[in-house]
Image (cartoon, rainbow, N blue to C red):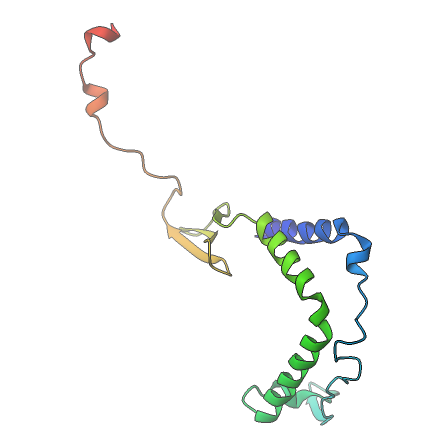
Length: 161
């Protein structure tokens, strides 16, 4: 799995390095509507932690409550702001995504490793966004050999003598 991550990271680096500098250094067009937009600011609500004799304060602790409607509104405002700010790069983002996706094999399987009585491996399936983590009980990951002995014991034909 580490090798796959390293490959994808290197692929991303190589792809970005190969892009023309003019493409990466795009300036925000003046008329895209985001020039006057300001980023939403999260409210500061200090929360004090006193654990094991250490005291620390987290000013944004309240943002971890995923069911809080105020947190949801703040995150939606951040998404709107980000989409407005990055709108001029949509074509580049799509092109980069398609190029990176084209460099990764869609149907792939990692080399299995044995731990205890199981072999663990990951599989990529075309159309899925995430790998499938799997394990198989047994002593070997090799496919079973056919037990057909008919060919072995069949008499040789006259043409093969």
